[in-house]
Image (tube, rainbow, N blue to C red; front, side, top):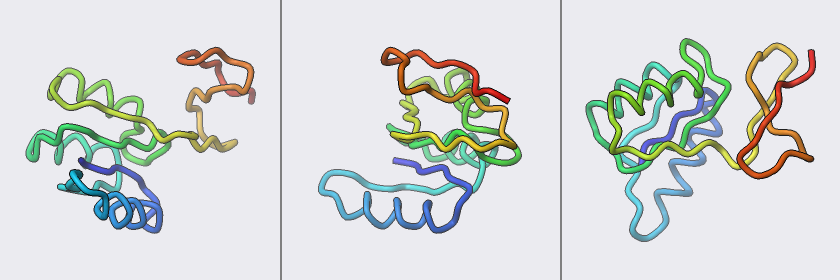
Length: 106
């Protein structure tokens, strides 16, 4: 598994907690989407846990790049994406059906 999150405390905590689980090996951690793409191409993890809101290359764009460059790696978003007023990311709404989303209001 590779973990991609721009917040060092979150990234480090996930590496530590997930690394303690039997049968799961964390092979890398990325600070942004561009690094996630680079590490995934090099390390070829089965799964990438990808934050959506990151600098350089956001999780949505990084996921699209990985689907093209490393189709064998599954990319998972966090359970609850972080949305902020400064981020143009599409965020799920509480009333959305599973798998659907709507643009965050300005």
